[in-house]
Length: 116
Image 1 (cartoon, rainbow, N blue to C red):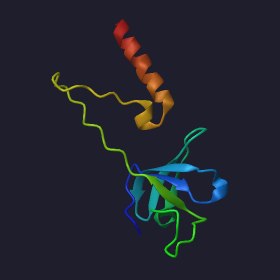
Image 2: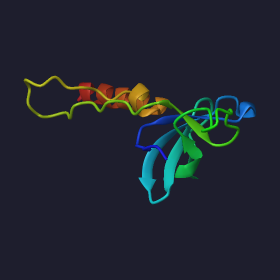
Image 3: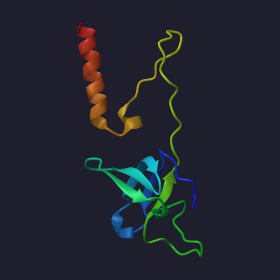
Image 4: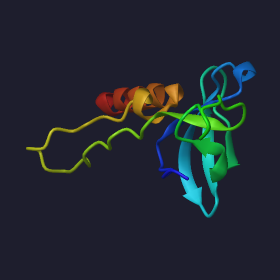
C-alpha cells in the first residue's frame, strides 16, 4: 500500500463517476477523512485507506474499476504568517482552502477593518 498523506487529491476510478475528486483532510487508523471537490457543496466523509491507490491500473495492468487513484500530491505549505513587519504576509485565499465563500468573508472583514 502506498503512503497516503493529508492534502493529496484522488479521482474516482470508475468511469461512470465522471472524474469525481476527493481531497484527504486527515488520517485516523485505517480510514481517511476526505472532502469532495468540484461542483456543488463540499461534503466530508470517511473512506478506507485501501481504496486509495497510487495509479489507475492494478498490479497486473488492468484498469481499476473501484476506489480512487492519486492525481495530485499535497500542495506545499505556505510559510507561517508572523508579526515581524520585515516578513511579507501571505494571505490565505479560496484557491488554497477550497471554500470560495471564505475569500469573500475575508474581503468583507478587511473592508470593515479599513472603515474603523
